[in-house]
Length: 269
Image (cartoon, rainbow, N blue to C red; front, side, top):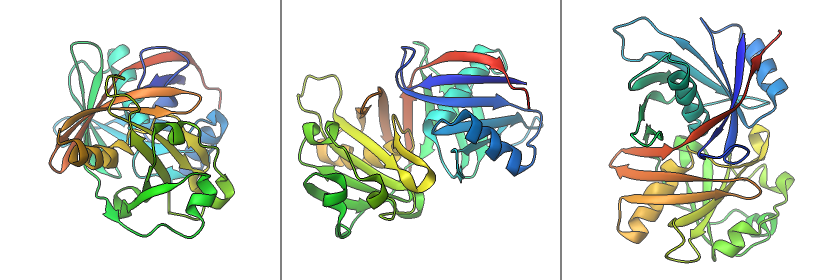
């Protein structure tokens, strides 16, 4: 069967966030899906199969890290929508049936893809003991995204602090059910983006995720309230970076980004 690796939230190869994508006729056993994701060994591998016409969704979609299945993944959804469009399997908007409900993906005129995700809540909480030490940085504010994501959203002093992080991943592992989103306002107002972030998910087998679409469902409302604008752009990443355009629409957040297929091969399993 065909397997592809797609760099998401970038228009350049070897940047953004890579995801594996497999289009199937149905979902095999979970153990097989998990084994493939472990073999691909990227932050997420997406598995999708077509659904009967006339339903609320067009494709069923699941996401696996190398160690577990997850409830929401933005970059692997973007990668899947890109593969469907680039291979001719879809030529219009696509609706995915997922653990997080029905998620839409629509191609833009410039080749980017816009995804429709549920907006995540964020509630102020006290910083867990040892969080600043585990990050190696001063913590300005902490918010809990609760069941929406299972992350802590942590604002740091400035973009330089975010970009220079070298966390203790073992110490971060128990801080939340999924991980820690770190963020700060952009260093310069004319930088071309409004805020920067990095995401660490050692609890699900991913020390650092380069560009996390799902995290922006919390980052968008957080920074939109700060800036007083619903349309923003986020830069995420350490060694690999990418851009996510966000549009806050009440209980939905629109996430827009480009994608590039970098590997198109055959899975012998």
